[in-house]
Structures are given as C-alpha cells and as structure tokens.
Length: 227
Image (cartoon, rainbow, N blue to C red):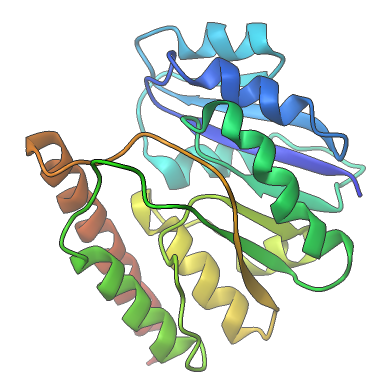
C-alpha cells in the first residue's frame, strides 16, 4: 500500500508540526502534502520543518479549494490511496493507519474516522443531523455515525470518482454521497484521534454557522443535479 496524505490547514502552527510528524512516520505513507490555506501564523514553515511538502496559498479559500490544490499538485505514479486529515490532530494522527488498513485489505473503498467526543465540545446536532439526513436520503439509506468527519482514506479509484471537492465544509457530505451513489464501499471505523474541540461559545457558534451554510449549499447543489 502506497498512500499520500493531504492536510489542509489554516492557522494551525501550534499543532500542525506534530500532525505532520505523526503521518510521516507511517510506513504506508510515502508523501505528506500540507496545503496552507492563507495562514498568517507560520503554519507553512512549521509544516515544512516537520517533513511535509508544502503548498502555500496566499488567500484563504476554504477546505474544498485547499484540497483541490492538493490533488492538482500530485503527479504519476499515482498512489493506491489518499488520506484526508485535519491539521490539528497532533500526535494522534498516527491513527491514520487504522483508516488505511481496510482499503489495503480490499474491504472498503472509503473509510471514515469516528472520533471519541472531545471534552468541552458539543453543539446541538443541527449540522450533523442535516448531513446525516442527506446521506441517508441519497446514499441508499446509509446511516452515517460521523457524517462530517474530516479523517478519511480513499482508494485512488474511488477518489477520482467522487471529485470535484465541494466548497468549504461541504466536502465530507459530498464525498460520502457520491461514493455511495456509485456503489463504492464506505466503512466507518473507530479511531483514537483527538483534535481541537468546538465549544459552546461565540467562536464555536460562528464555526457551526459557517459549517451549516456550506453543508446546506452542498446538499442543494447535489439535489439540483438529481433533477
């Protein structure tokens, strides 16, 4: 199994170094690509020192755009699988090996990490329920535990079938729905990963509002393609 990891990052200088180091240490990962999405805190420098190949974007364009830049940067020979990981996992990013294992064994085409609930996190489930309902409706009744999880691995074939990436925080919902509609095998797996909690404070609510709008926009776009 040869895998490439794509890690979009925006102002994650405090954790991105540990994240990159953990992923670089995985035996199946031959390259780590960090896409610095217009950070102002030196994220690109930290990532480069940690061993990543860094793509530096001058303006923040959102997660989907950052991942699109990452894919566009790849050259043949193509990997067997691609990891999509958040930049704030720190040392727990080593658990990405758990995402790759079912693909290497031929048991799944896309794996989705189900993370333990971090202390101090928790919204009201509005965005999760919106995403879960859309996946159930267009994914043949698939009941996703973690519809918004950004920790994923995809076979190269599956990845090509589910592109292009949706905008912003709609990435994950679109990936899951497109994969299921094309009868690729999606498998959720428990992973002992940790990332920064989104709390019930003003920054947390603003984050969820942006997430809700992006997910809703993505669902609307997918629905229009069905009609």
